[in-house]
Length: 286
Picture (cartoon, rainbow, N blue to C red):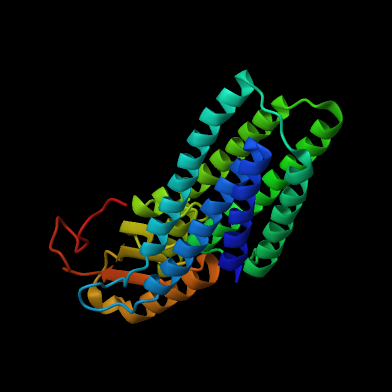
């Protein structure tokens, strides 16, 4: 339903922008078109990323969500470049705007954006859904700016405001794109999620397991909602003294409770596990 609303809004604003001569309205329409793409890609991303893992695709296709988010953000950047170019031309040669047509259409666009935001919701943390939500939110803000500029132009005939508001919309586009791209790149580059304190995770694993050291610690995401962890827990004592099952159970419970990490691969090393140096640990370094 959200896609349908925004598709109608886009068509109305494009036609209204052309007929009224308003670049701001055309910019808002272009931004709305990116909303439609965001929602379509978001929907497809959700469906594809739900594919169950198998032996070949061991993580399923969860990173398809990240790909769609990047495409959405790059689409916004392309829209922004076009708007800047047109705004520069309008700034040098302001064009009279048919405000009697521009204002009602801008109000319709704002109403549609608000309704779409309410339908989509704001609590979902998945990256592609958040990308679509940010598209809609910033487009609602840009619609407000278009309406305000239209009212001011109605009384002052300062038609250069049309170009100025277009630049404002580009700034909104840039902010939303940059934030989404940063989060997507963290996942693609397998950087630890920004809400996870890796040093704290390391220290809590050591405390919980009673280990001499923890090495090979990796924390990464394959999507915006799932965090994975793998590590080697070095006990550096006779294997008969080590209850590996209890250690793994305790560490897993701690990770789930304190950090929300439920996908783990933990290796407990004791005795002559690796026959390296004078103890059985594969690596003494973190």
